[in-house]
Image (tube, rainbow, N blue to C red; front, side):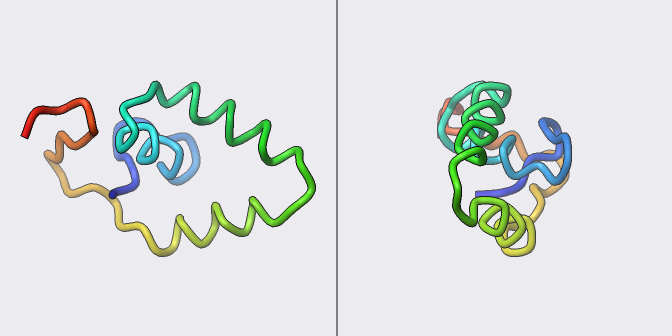
Length: 68
């Protein structure tokens, strides 16, 4: 899994999750925002993912919807 270079607003975490699951990035962002409203450390999870998940290499097409 990679952070998205193409579908990023802050760090590309939601865009990378969307690519991996084959979902629209906007849907993943909305779900993440709604889940963030529930008390808990979801913002910490986002920052940890931002740090640990590498950015997609240049030219990486990625995504679950891509044929291998």
